[in-house]
Image (cartoon, rainbow, N blue to C red; front, side, top):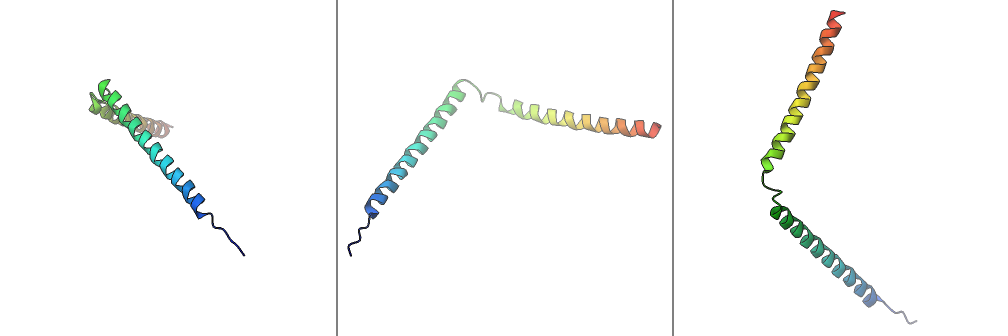
Length: 80
């Protein structure tokens, strides 16, 4: 009985996938670096703190508005 093992060909295919994965990850890393450089050159990181305060104040306004609505409902229910 003569049995052949094709481990060499499956090993080759595994190495091909490894190199493809390595090249894909390098391309993604280079792309991310280029996007970062573009954003720095276009001055997108000029005032990062401003975005934080916009989010903070909008959340605070929503909280105050919801409390006012709840208080308005309670006062109108107590009048009836």
